[in-house]
Image 1 (tube, rainbow, N blue to C red):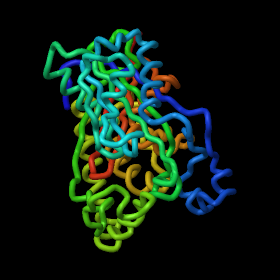
Image 2 (cartoon, rainbow, N blue to C red; image 1 turned 60 degrees about the vertical axis):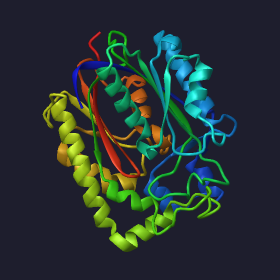
Image 3 (cartoon, rainbow, N blue to C red; image 1 turned 90 degrees about the horizontal axis):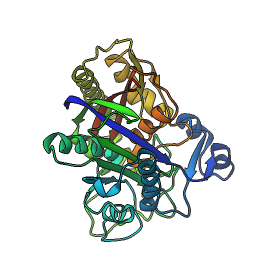
Image 4 (cartoon, rainbow, N blue to C red; image 1 turned 180 degrees about the vertical axis):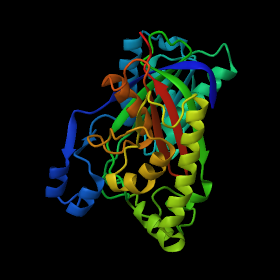
Length: 343
């Protein structure tokens, strides 16, 4: 999506106080040594006491207070998640809006798997561009991965899951924004939805296929049926298209010296090296940046947490750009170009 003018992004990530180090996970048998090496994480944040919607509220309150944004002036609140939010037949986005006092913001829930936060930003941008009267949008994500429904180290291949919430304010005002958003592009590989379904039928009730969420089982079926190269080829073509298009829409050449970082998703090291790093390197010469070793994969919020880190850690000098890349089961792949504003 080509923007007629940059939009402002400000972001916060909320991390719980508790962590499980990889050494602790090895000692208690949560992960084996080979898998730990393939993942490359040093620790995972763990939220035993705070439910995901409350995690999102904590991230959002910090962001709104820092930016001086009145929640009553928000036009939209988009909330993305991967896992259970704490109640059944209930709307977490409305809870977040209600708790924040964002009474005029339209709450929208996003089920885009691990790309939900990125799609939330893209959706917020589309609304702001389409409606000149729309107020700023708040995009929140929050996930926690607790047993017995989800084993943060064993429920999936290629990642281990950390409990993190994010909040991103998308606004026409840019003067005080953390970053400027120049372009966002999403590509789709819907034929890959079978990777998370396998040969399973569509059951009547949650957790009917297994008492614990087990993404490894359908992935094994996918590999047996289609082969790993089928996924890697499909992903590479969509990643290349997303990155190439996004850079062009931001007015940047792939080797532009102002492009300081190409930010990777927060997946395991081996998964990144196989699926994401090669097509990203083919599409841009920007140095690749991995911000996820101490967070793990944070559900729907990988890209949004990286937006927060780019700003909080001063990883961009004024006038420098970063490209952020993310993907989510289904599959969708999103590329986004941001820059640090000139103060």
